[in-house]
Amino acid sequence: MEAYQLLIDLHKNADRQGPGGDEETEKALSLAGIDRTTPLKIADIGCGTGASTLLLARLLNARITAVDFLQEFLEVLERRAESQGLSGKITPLCCSMDKLPFENGEFDVIWSEGAIYNIGFEKGVTDWYRYLKPGGMLIVSEITWITASRPSELQKYWEGEYPEIDMPSSKIGVLEKSGYSPLGYFVLPEHCWLDNYYRPMQARFEDFLDRNGNSEEARAIVDAENREIELYEKYKAHYSYGVYIARKLDHGNP
Ligand code: SAM
Image (cartoon, rainbow, N blue to C red):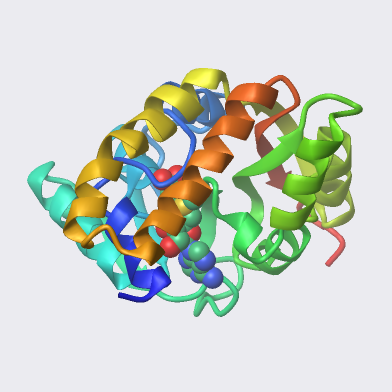
């Protein structure tokens, strides 16, 4: 099996494919001042199997376009939506986040958890700007340094994985120069990483390796995930996901 298919196999039966939590999703909604009764049109970009999509659908009076470029994840999301009676509120869209077929000003809210790094934060917030209505809300999580300096082992690792990793002030600066007014920022707490993401993933490793004949490729994936987890456990004081909440200015720049 190709590495890509193996990654899908490891992650598709998980509740979430990245750090986050229901409480934190609700916190972001409240910082954005989103009213639960107003009809809203939302895009959840890089939705995976729908951790945030399903919660937003449950909490809000919203129609949500759930975007991911992996059809396998969207199929799981559709099944979950159906079993929770939420299908009518969610439209899955298999598409890359840098080739979105949306109209200008189509959405009240753009939501993206743990996914914008795939095209880079600056490109993502700049490209997606046009799809928001004036006054619309962008809510996006992004890997972020939370200390001004950090050990070189960690710095090297993350600069290899994602060179755009930076301090919150610089992410907020990117939002400001891209035509948004930042309204809030908070850091995902440890339980979002360990209890909600890494521990459930570790519990799937044994079955994953069995299913895939303990192949070298499957073992390489488990090793890479374990390395990421080890680094998190060692250096979690230095980085997390930042959740950024920003409003599109009525007469923003771009
Ligand atoms: N938001 C989900 C969550 O928090 O559980 C998923 C986060 S996961 C770390 C990143 C997601 O982005 C994956 O579902 C992946 O398939 C999707 N993705 C990666 N590159 C993409 C792209 N270019 N276009 C659309 N989706 C992409």
